Length: 554
Image (tube, rainbow, N blue to C red; front, side, top):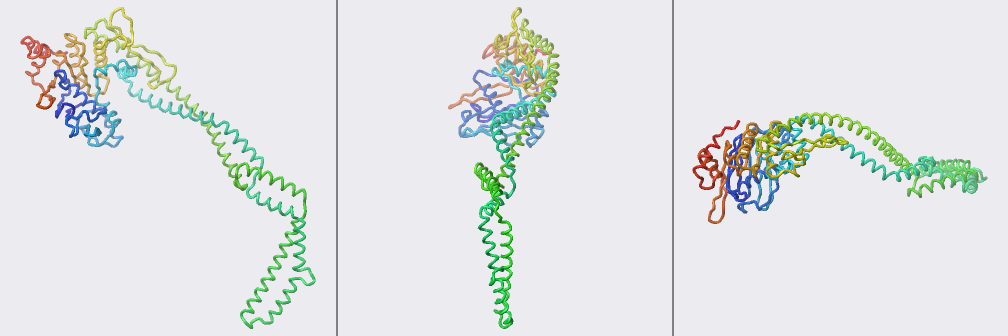
């Protein structure tokens, strides 16, 4: 619950500090005194946006701060997930600086508005004249049903499963779209792969074939050169090897005469080894340089295939073609895997849909059980609020497929008079009827809600007299389980206060300031009397006010 609220430099409020009781807190005051400003301050704490126009003094920052105690455990869970400090007291603060920028803090740790909204939603339920229209919303109506049915855990499990289900559907669609757009590309890739498979590429093949081709193409010339080389080196009458041997022998006779002689003798021996090597090479090349027109044709044909593929793929070697071949296999394999993934996803989605349908049926069964209870209790409360002919009926339609909240389409229908036709609330309920209906529903399901604090802003609009008194009784009864902060113009509602706060204006020389004070017993009587008859209140109004305040609520 909210223990206290402090407001500084906000609108026409210079500085106020409000202390709240854990039960029914009533806020009254003249029109324009600043009651709605207090509601606006609550809105800031709940993550609403603001700008510098709200500053009372444009040279100072605005600060709105609230302290919460005995708040729901789920808040600590939310805070701990984001590493916020946790204490017995929870302090939320908003600051708005003159430039218009605002900052938010939870337990003195900076936070953003989205997280602030997430936390504050677990702390405060705000019902203003505008928020009463939430009753028109089918999601809000379903939330009411689920709260009364105790579906929190069941629904939490369902929504977690549904989220995964929707994610898988999105993933499937993306894969199917990808598959559709890539089919033509896959066909072309398959064609390329088949072409490369048919080519039967081998690493280094191109270099080897080009060497073979050159040897075969010039076989006769090469053979002639090799024979000539061998003849000159070793076979001629005055061949190079013999003449070198003769000269080497002569050098040998001078071995040891000088170091240079020794070096030259070694060089001559090396030359002899080289001649032997050249001779052997010429013999080997000669053996391989036989003319073979058929083999030449085969090599040329194979090279033509390779050169065509090299040109088509824009590369320089068969090794690069092999890399392309391997890449095509990998990509086509991935495409094949994607097809398998699609089939797997379809299976998983069908499985999850079956599970969701089963869970939806359990939710639906649980919801339908409480329809009569909700209808009966709300109709009774409407009767207490002088709407004895009014009725509600919960209309339920089965959906064809699982949705975010199950497979139920639920709408609370309303009729104000006997013989009337049940219709959507927004079509047939007046403002006053909607306010009474909202209070009747909220008070019926309040015990099933974990909301510690409920704020009602002029929910009694359009209601007076005995009906307003009965509304006050309902609010008083509701405050036994929840902290209520109620802004009202109704003396009957105000008379039920446990703590009564009065908002008033003070006109200074250059501006107007709003103040808030807690009323004691005598001041409460005077304020309720003033609300009944005007200012100053009549003697009769004072007596009537005393009677209203002393009335005990069951």
